[in-house]
Length: 316
Image (cartoon, rainbow, N blue to C red; front, side, top):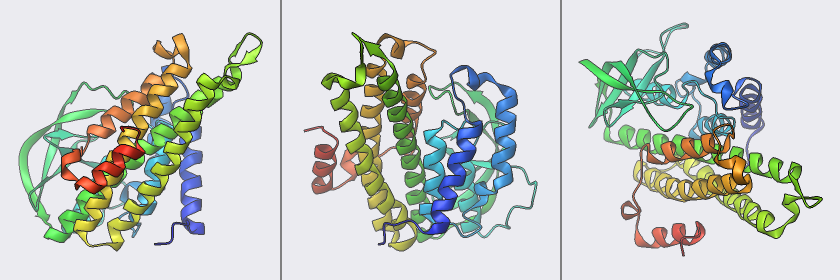
């Protein structure tokens, strides 16, 4: 495995970062700005990234976009449509025509990222079923809208066991990339506040009680980048069972690391960190939701890898 990004991958990451920075929410109040959301939806649709797997994109490339969207709290569907595109591709469906309705996926009977989406794909064993989205469901994540799944269901094809395994590995990788992106965004938010907020004539970031947790967060981010990059590469390069295992390890590590980083961001903000207006809680909500989506239990990973994940995440 070559951990370095190619020039094309770096360009894709930078393009996703620019789009997210320009149109992603810059405050909690921006989440209710329908005009901004409409512009963001139009921009994301124009990129064609929701069908990037059909266009030959690797797991690494899909994860790069998901990470940047998580970092800037992009609040229009991406992860769900990418997974739906990969399901349809594996089942032998036709490539989506330009302007075709966006489709998302359902997990445990809930359509994820269903804002403005009427169709949903469900993986039942190796069978792919198509249904419709129903009423919206309330959730902790303020940047994503989930919905009920409604029938009647129609057959949309069938995957081989290997294709099902790779899809599950991709689902774990994309949710893990969202975790890492949100962690990076929360860490940057906290660092910016620590530089600007002054007490007793000094920036609060100059005090060890603030600086050390932020430094630990940066170390967790660097570890998360490494474990995620390997899992994203494994989606297409390793046998399905090994790809799933790599993705499970990455999910466990990044979920705990991201939660710790977001909780530190709340604490660094002090009293303002516990208010609705501070974006720190939005990052924390997104992390908690992404950790539960395609969740992984420690028992699903072998004892050796479990111990490593717990040690690296500061559990021991």
